[in-house]
Image (tube, rainbow, N blue to C red; front, side, top):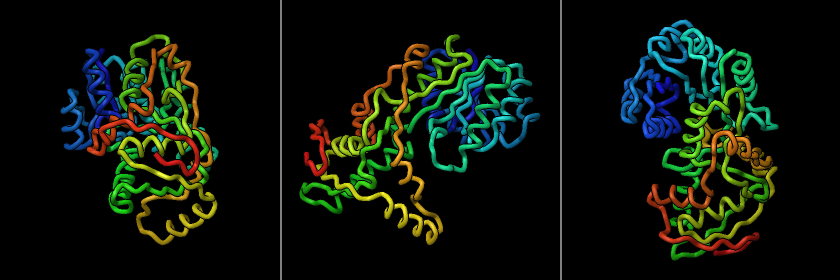
Length: 317
């Protein structure tokens, strides 16, 4: 199958392009810069000049000229491009399309992009395309994932600077760490994307794409610490003052490195059933402990051995 890919130069995009090549597909990837063209070509795709900001008509001409069988939209739906992408896809007579959204639209917080993403999904559903929408949870698994790779590096730095000689690392955990998380490995998301393209059963359906089971945030921290060989003592702290202090920091910093909304999300459970994806996409994600140990190894932070986790606040291992 010949696939037209948007967002192919991004983090997930590289994995999707690699998986598509492995499965024998041919990919044409939209690229708006020389750097994007270089990135997609490195993953075996043919670059296609274009920008999602160009509008529906220019995109439609670009899409039609690519002569593809299906669209794989990995570009974020949070920037208002969905109407133009859908219109361009229809103009190019590509009636099969897979869109990657996010489980973040289920948040109770008034996130700025939530309404835009929800409107994008409605545009897709009512488009007349044979669509599939995939909603990944927090994606991790390799350097540059913007999520757990940062956490692993921060923990490793704290271990070196704050706890020399192998002493346990004391970690304050806002909100207590009891809320659920369900991270998903980037390679598992890429496999789900390609399966959604290939399987007729996936048409006209929306799937949550998550790890095999939810874990508490405290368990996530313990597992990350174990992956880098770090002994830890977790201390729960109230969430409200942390949020208040972070808001003060946001107002004073020109480019804040973290925001109050990130702490607020720790008060929400992020657990999602994956039964439908397992049934229709043969989706079987790897356990979090396997994925995070592999990521620590890729970052050069791995401990070299698995450590047994002991549950409970204040526990050390």
